[in-house]
Image 1 (cartoon, rainbow, N blue to C red):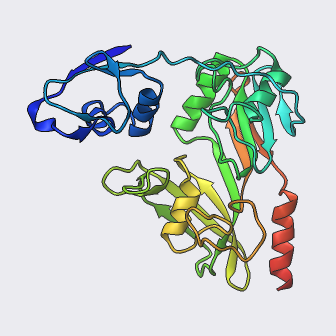
Image 2: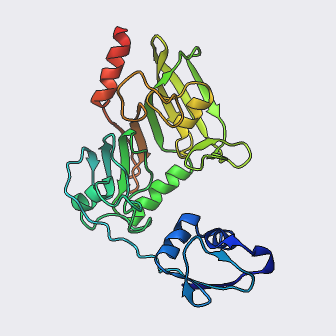
Length: 304
């Protein structure tokens, strides 16, 4: 795709990467700098560097290469399968595994493993990057996740997710001792206004989000809880619990930077998933056992 610009008088002596970033909001400054480095930006017919300063009347030509959809490869890997039939497959995802490929991370994801296990039997509604994926959990969150083998099942499960009829219960250990036995956090979640890679409670631009929590065990300085999702926003439990002063243990994004325990990310486990089977109409519920690291942490807290 080729884009043309004529530099106006008020843009004199401005770096070309900055000028293009302001003129074309769909392109990031880092991507523009990459185009400049590759010689894809011409001024009056000549390639220029990012440090070039535009002059009024400059004719700028930007060649943007067409996006190429990467080919996702199937990878044989050991999957902890909790249930499988011709419509759905439920997997107990381990800590550290990304659910689906993305730019810069095309291999070793759950999708790569599902493609090898299910072959061509995965729904295609979410495209080639996310075959079969209806919902996801964070890389360092463990537990049960459902994938769909055909578009019919995908649509049925997606509809249940949309109307919040799927049962999703998570187990977590949080900082601080929660006094009440149970409670609800009802606060909209949206992009953090400053740190764009984070989410936050955002009253103005957030989406409706509700988390119910219940205390399972209190320790010295920590609480073991069960959270049930009413909605499913990005980082919902992590953001909601941090917003009430009880961030998840090990969560370096929303909690303390230094963790007193040796952990890989937040202590969060998707323990229960219940849904109405898309073909039979029967309600099914599955439990993913606690991972070893989680059980060790609970024993350590109990001994202390």
